[in-house]
Length: 386
RNA sequence: UGGGGUAUAGCCAAGCGGUAAGGCACCAGACUUUGACUCUGGCAUUCCACUGGUUCGAAUCCAGUUACCCCAG
Image (tube, rainbow, N blue to C red; front, top):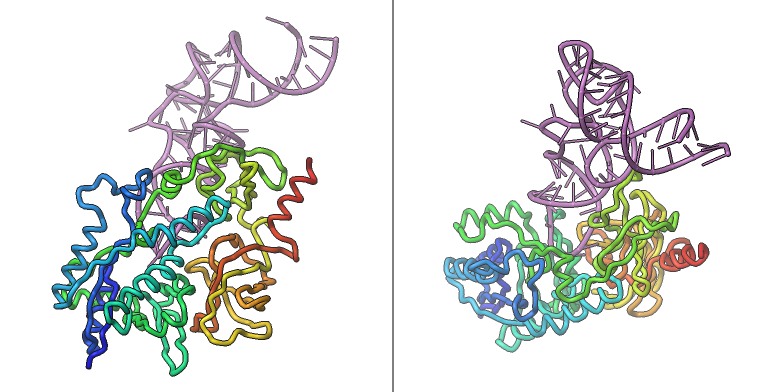
């Protein structure tokens, strides 16, 4: 009997080709189009470039997905996790921003929606396996499954998948993970999947889309003007419109002119509504050498007992950083990188790799330099001056 | 109201008689399933504080006006 697979079909080229490959491999494939965001119900008005369009992008994506499913002769379901997305992803997203941190919603979307809510739906509907068009690979063994980077290292998406459970991984297929993007497009071309073959890669928050980000946040978090202070001289160098809208390492949107070159955000005081910046991208205030990562999801059954030498990414598409990590408890690791890495941001994810294997990842809680938290360094600098 | 100095795009800032460098900011693209970073392009068609003058030709020289700064009082 053919294995039943439920494939998330987004209306993009990757999942379309994944559908074809699964079918070729002899699976009994059903497709599902997911809708997780309702712009009107979710008050996603400001900063939304398509809010006035006649055809909303989601429906266009559905039409494109439908065309693919029809072309391949596969059934297409529609599923709706708008409530789950709001409750499990977006609520957390906003609460993190309110704390002055910078969350990564797409990692939560994979954890709670695609590989949890959607996975449960699949099981209820009698599917053995879930598939998606991610650039990632799974290696199944008798006891566990490993997640490997996608073969196209320019498109590798394991970073976003670091929080899915071992159990979910065991029931997952990534049909295009061994391909490179241009091969996927070629296949789509060859199969005459006209609706998606030349479609531009989607960007922005998954299921929400490209937004003017500051305006997007303003739909949910109030503006509150304040000062921008140079952490070096402690002089006011500009004004901001809301400390929550900026992130560590950010250059654009500060509006600071003058002759000192570009400025970068190094920290913020949410209470006092002050944004701290530094001059030049080589500034010491941007570089840290260790951090604490919490809520770690580790794919292997056993946690390493000793310090482990591996590599890490602190943001998507960042080059691998050489690190050593040590578990301080079963969900928390201390990550060290004495060479120094710039702009590591609390709330973002640190994801660990051993060569091609994605080991797991967790949320960056606190960032240190020479044993002192970057936040403390800022606080100390400010209080020493006053 | 003595003397000296400076006035160039939103902010800095080159230019010193031959027809407006550069940086920051900003805007637009590219890159990108988060936020960022990065890259590329655009950004004073000339009233270069203002008004006259010299010159084939001035932001650049001269005179006056105005504003600000500094040193003296």
